[in-house]
Amino acid sequence: MGIEEYGGGQGPHPEVLVVTTNDVPGFEVRQVIGEVFGLTVRSRHLGSQIGAGLKSMIGGELKGLTKTLVETRNQAMERLVEQAKARGANAVLMFRFDVTEAADVGTEVCAYGTAAVIAPRA
Image (cartoon, rainbow, N blue to C red; front, side, top):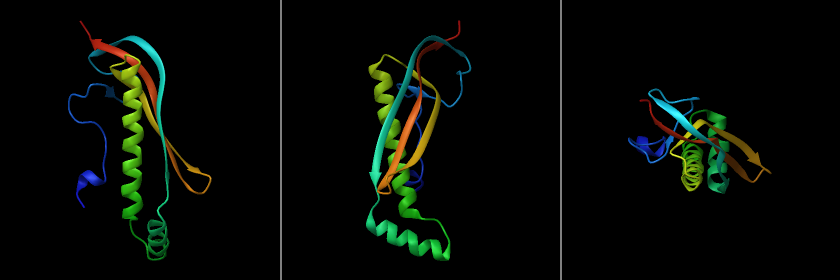
């Protein structure tokens, strides 16, 4: 499996810049639009659960679960970006993920942040 299966994030020159910081160096916040989020809930695959149970007894990375969580986070982030674009933002500041168990049947991933319009400083 390649590195792209275990990572995420944005490529160069995104339409909506997503950052974990309060601001972007060299840019000013022209307008704060408000909170945006992307949410997804994924059920657990029975095969992955059995494999994870066996792997937890001997140690090591749970690659199937890692791959599923990466895909889930990426989907939540894509939904966040779509919501930000729909509201007229070109940036999301203070970006975070929240991951919780969903009634013992899956994992809920929420990507959230503050939608804003930013522009280069003059």
